[in-house]
Image 1 (cartoon, rainbow, N blue to C red):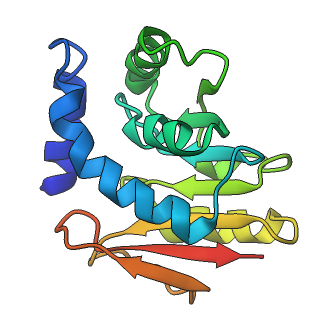
Image 2: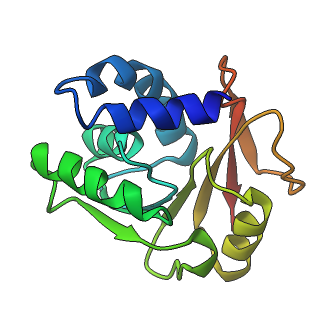
Length: 172
């Protein structure tokens, strides 16, 4: 229910100028914790799987770190609004958007891989990422209470939110 509501708000935001500012506080605090958890810096190249139509996580990561970011989503309806958001905020040289499934991605060249809460099947995506990750790759996974991710994380941070219960860090 909350995932669907989040997705609906993110889609609505493309039609109401400035609406993202109402949603951003939800993401910004959580993203700040996740950046600290993974030690993301401007030297990192971050891949975000499950970008959605309103890439606030990427927006916040970039503003906190100046890291280069690539966004992926397998929903073609999310790509155009995500690209518009990136363009509107003059981030075309820092944030790149592609339509691709998280199960089919090659993570070579990325130092940090971020798996959004909406990604499904999350366990399969995480398993595929861990199999191909090079040493010291950091994988961040947002989870909710109903996710069936049975791989023990290196570290995690709890969130006081219904939609995102905790963020897990996996280091290869």
